[in-house]
Length: 411
Ligand code: MN
Ligand code: MN
Image 1 (cartoon, rainbow, N blue to C red):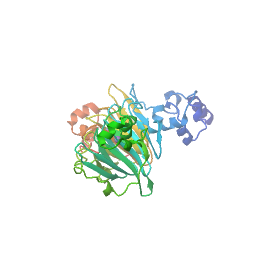
Image 2: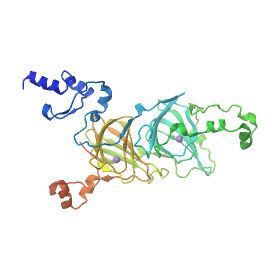
Image 3: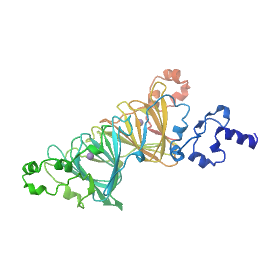
Image 4: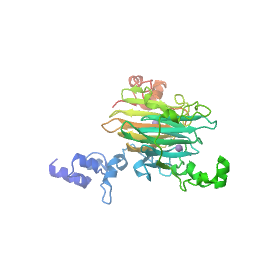
């Protein structure tokens, strides 16, 4: 083929790609699939308005693989698209059923508190599970029997507050980090961070004579009650943790914090997995979690979960997931750090590391126990003539399938 005819075909197939380098092509993807031979190519270039930066983040949304089919709900949300609630010394943004309508079972909040800044004393109907992304915080709680809890949590630590249990969070200055940033996951997709029960909000909406009678104090004692909720505000400098252990009727027996990174991971040739559910973190009775690391080219294997929806949070790297929804339905999504992914109950899926750094993400489930079904293990442990009849694989190839589960396989 002459250079002129090659250029003519490329121009016909996608004018924007003609003069661009490989890097520019990936930055400005075109909704086309197939070989450079125009006869085998489907799709066409975009003539109208476009957002190249956004399209570059989601190349498989713009040009889905041929295996994608049918109508699947949206299973991706970026926290970058969530409204930011800005407060003095912190912020909060949320990904709930309002942002991601499929996410009925769970909702998430991403929050930042600078050192000394408090997420005010509050409670809510939903249970709260948390992963500390960066920095340190002091958390406190009191239960229905007057038992108390206080701990300092750092990177990779979890906490869990049962629904209705009052608690507080305060950013700490530690190891050169000014406060902290964390992810909260709630066991109801309809949760709203703006609808929690705040101490100051209640006080401001109770008659002062009732407050005086309730606390056995003069009415004048309540002259300085904030008129408006504090929510996130700079608080008193915290002292040593030991000073904040309040005693009461003793410590809450099922500790509300857990060191997830201290767990020895399941290591495979393609990465690692740490699983934290109520068997190792007994307080966490409604949320089970896994922290997954996939090396470049590696794959979180084809699997599904027999016990509920999966809410994902991407911590680092780049990943691609195809979700299989029965009835020939399948849809592929690209994810990067700060994105939320969602897999409805029982739908098959994999996650491939499509970047050149480690892909790290969290899987959360509204369940006391973590559970997954491995496709490879299922095939390996089903009579092989039956597997052969479904797949056309050679008996030797079926024999080679691992009956031992490998959650992450190498590239
Ligand atoms: Mn809370
Ligand atoms: Mn999964």
